Length: 271
Image (cartoon, rainbow, N blue to C red; front, side):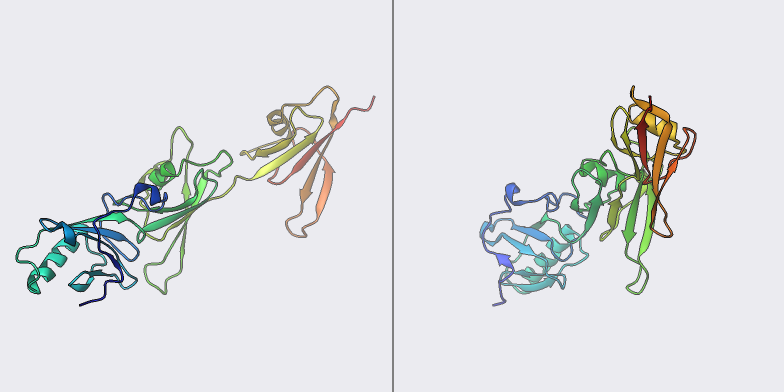
């Protein structure tokens, strides 16, 4: 008799409370692969119903039948293959078998960075980048307006692809993110938006996201404007030199541009 190490000889299924966000019920899974957990129902023979896991070689071990290759097959095709083996080996005359994917681990994507719930998520059927972000609770407030998708090459020797995808805004997602289908093994990263910093005699010191064409006047407005003690002639920016790594401090005017990482300091008025 074949080994039953990968099978559970009882009809109980995975309790929903044992499943994480990345191990949800299979639903419309197109094909199965290593790591997926299947539940096999044998109609008329409930004692033969069993839960099995696809091993690293893409096989499952069915009680009394033995190993069966199932990788890349649909759940329906898996059921038919098991039925054929049962009939061929004379175990059942006319087996009727249904296979359900109860845990998906083979077709996963990883979502990292500035999202509400980063982690690993299963691809069930077709999933776009927009749908993935929706499942993960959406981008955080300080997320960049572009996502980076790292994707395996078409062949083992091919270089990894780096795809930059425009997200759009929360009211109107870009067509690019709506239409982009994900692939198993994709890694999606949402970087934090570049920021600048304001402190001193302003309404609200702190870090603020960069904007296109940002100047000192706009930066101070985002920080609540100048307070009653502030001097609009004593505004400095501390900026790191990207070549030397040294930070230099310079006096600026309201119309001067602001760069990512700048630290703006507003000094008080001299009476």
